[in-house]
Image (cartoon, rainbow, N blue to C red; front, side, top):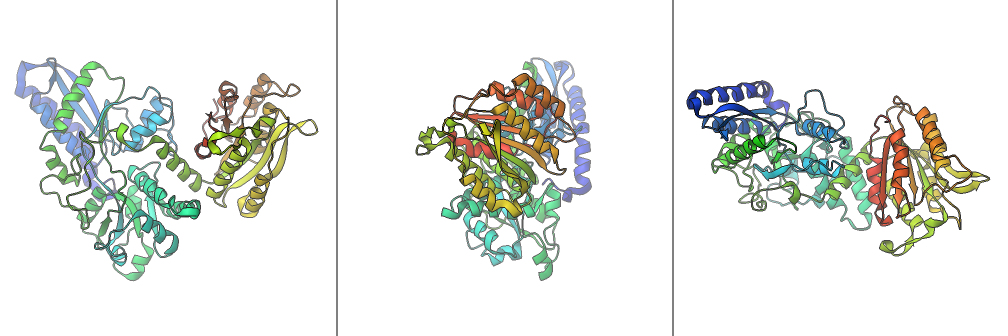
Amino acid sequence: MRSGFRGAGAVASATALAVVATGAWFGYREFTGPACSGQVKLTVAAAPEIAPVVQAAAGRWVAEGAAVDGTCVAVEVSTQEPVEVAAAVAGKHGVTLPGVGQASGTAITPDVWVPDSSTWLLRIKNSGAAAFDPTNGASIARSPVVVAMPEPVATRLGWPQQKLTWADLVRQMNTDTKLRTGIVEPTRDAAGLAGLLALTAAAGKSGRDSQQARTAALRALATGRSALRQDLLARFPRSTDPAALAAGLGAAALSEEDVIAYNRTQPPVPLAALYLDPAPMALDYPYAVLPGIEPAKASAAAGLFGALTAPTFPDRLVGQALRGPDGVGGAGFQAPVGAPAGGPAPLAAGGGTAAGGPDPSALDAAVSGWSVATQSGRMLCVIDVSGSMRQPVPTAGNVSREQVTVAAALRGLDLVDDSWAVGLWTFSTEMVGSRDYRELLPIGPLSTQRSKLRTALGSIRPTQDGDTGLYDTVLAAYRTVQDDWEPGRVNSLVLFTDGKNEDADGIGQRELLTELARLADPERPVQVVIIGIGGDVSRTELEAITKVTGGGVFVTEDPNKIGEIFLRAVALRPTAPR
């Protein structure tokens, strides 16, 4: 349980890690004498709830004679929050995970990483870290993701006799104003992300109103989100008084381990663990050997993995309220009331792996949708209306590129709330006299111009034979967003285009880049996000722009995919111009 409820014990445990690793090393040397020489030092970073068991197993393995080709092995296990290690590893590979940001000064990049979920490995790989290819990845423990509810609240919903589904929870969230829901920031917490995936999948099956149901669920969660797990747990009611129950947190996605550990503190109001159908992805604690370590360390990592997969290891996990990698608890494990008989269905043989996890695109969509729905932004949307946007899209029923683009913008508009400010331009060549762009609506609050934006988007039509006046439009739009830059928001320019700059009478690339470099201000960053559609765009041309301004380029050969790309693009957080 990654929370403040472990109190001083958590601090003592963390402090003891280096001592135990060192003590195991010296104890082994005294026991074995000259049987080995030298030292191979293996560093391991483990999620807080599993770190003590990993530490103890490593100590026993070393004391029993761990060596690689005659060289003694020392293992240093440190307790590290998965989000901190993820930030450090991503930074080492030149990428930043949405919602995670830069690594803190205390984060380390270990030889072996045991996070709580394979989703961390998938997110780093899918963020563009081509060289990130960890080996092994097999699960060494497991904890199902549940919906935690105060027992009196759960009883009102029929627990433990009635089996509930995620669709039931979505309906409760959207109709029961007394149910206060919460979540640990899912961009920074694997259990929160698993719950978000399950919830949005259920909302997406709500028929014609699926988009509205999904958006409503996201916003309900957003009002009760917490940056830290201990803050969320502290919001559960601490009294059986009806007023305290009504004011306290009523439901949150957590791990089974969290619920067991919370209830071990004997709170005034215990938590019930609801195992909703369909079961969300569990926390699977992958053993990830990070790329780039030397062969001797890789051999040591293999030896330690053997110690962590010994037949007795699941029994040692019981003290940490964790199950074995097959989903079955060790000797003495007591699952919460209402847990499925025999435990959740086992993972595939050999435990879970990053490759066997959820679809990376599903993770991207969930993280991006959450970021868009919960951040406050100020955005100028600029849409290409050159003649080529009339081309049909076979994968979208042969509607035009323009229609697919407008539909994506409309879906994005439905997701963001009224705290956003949005404006709309179109561009081609000679749209207003010799000017290549036309303002349909200035940047303004959605609270007052949402319906106007929908109408304006619906009125967009591609020109008959206009070309692509890209450079003049980008410069003018950048200046517009920067002129009234607002603190506390993501100020962005999002531009859709299916071509290259074709305005012979406008500015050239060198002039554009020089002027953007002059205007760019790290204290007032403007995200320039360019979505290229089809095979006629030049990624190099577009990336030259965002390298100066910050932001990103997304190119798809299939225009029918721009809806999901649009959400990923808008979810980008500012980075310093390069």
